[in-house]
Amino acid sequence: MKKPELLCPAGNMIKLKTALRYGADAVYIGGNFFGLRARANNFTPEEMREAISYAHSLGKKVYVTMNILSRNEDLEAEKEYAKELYEMKADGVIVSDLGTVMMVRETVPELPIHVSTQANNLNWLTCKTWIELGCERVNLARELSLSEISDINVKLRESGIDCDSHIRLEAFCHGAMCMSFSGRCMLSDYMTGRSSNRGDCAQPCRWNYHIVEEQRPGEYMPIEENERGTFIFNSKDMCMIEYLPEMLASGVGSLKIEGRMKSEYYTAVTVSVYRRAIDMLFENPEGYKKAVPEFIKELCMVSHRDYTTGFYLGLKGEQVYSTSSYMRDSDYIGIVKECGKNDNGTYRICLSQRGNFKKGDLLDFLVPNKAPESHRVSLMYNDKGEEIESAPHAMMDVVFDIPFEAPAETLVRRKKTGD
Image (cartoon, rainbow, N blue to C red; front, side, top):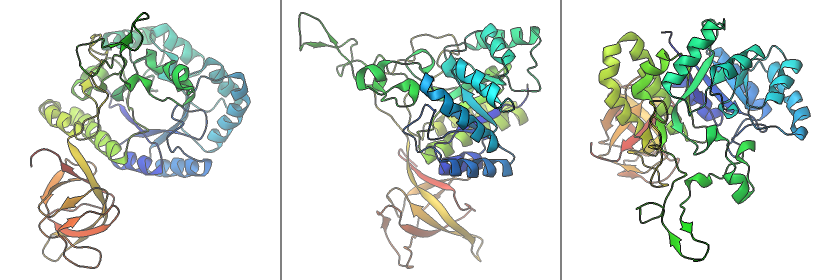
């Protein structure tokens, strides 16, 4: 097996830098148009240039979404957008619409195209066709099992497709799943006038539903035994941290994390866990197996629904989540602004607060490329050097000493349960 690309979400510049700092090999971003996250902060053209330049300075890549289902009025503007992305030196565009693919090939043939999961890529012949049309990579539908992905990989190689010099197959390994076929949902458009296929999903699949019988208006009947109703459209979150060897053995060359709308803290934690897991898998496979429970525990620290392996293991129906609520086992406390070494070997940090904490709290420091390190706060000071008991105000600077180095931009949290 070759070490895979770790492809991570970046909803804005802060999240992009966080993803790259915590171990992403590549990030996917959206501009102000033609992507499926219209309500993310997204990137202006100037920010996109800066982002691509920054990633390239680290030897990493940036892919840009153009994965709406295009209509006639979109095509001319998309053509100019593709030219602009090529001029910016974007490493690829993520496209779902066949006409848009052909437009990009004709307009800027040197710009790599990655086919989005929105294209419902379910079989090897579909993947082969995309590649023969000039696409470099195919993101597989989330409805596939690992066995089916393995068959796709074998068939591509047998048909003469070079899967070694390029990453041909990409698949999601973590994040939210849509209760619809690879995200092509009409609920939002029908119920709210906001099209999920054009970047403006209202997420009605997360709402609470009952059945109403025609002759009994106003009489709401729960579909399941849950007294709050049913959330039959609502899916659990995907988590494949335990099955990375199987994903790679099936032929997946790029592991993709979902979550451009998620927080900077979510980005840091998920990227860090998958980075450490991938590296450990290749350097110490037995160590990886033993570390899986700790990796899962770490992934539960961020806001998430119950985790599932989706369809990968051949299971069907167990993805339905019985509530619309999220859970997390930690609170985001802040980010380190400065870190300097004291004469006694400890380190003095200045923390920019994002969540209330107080003296006596046990905090975790998420240093990139390391397992979290913990310290219980004994003394803390405000920016005037005055000793304080707590830090209740958002964005306030808090100074205290810790026994290890936590460089600037290290994220800090507090576990919710126990020490």
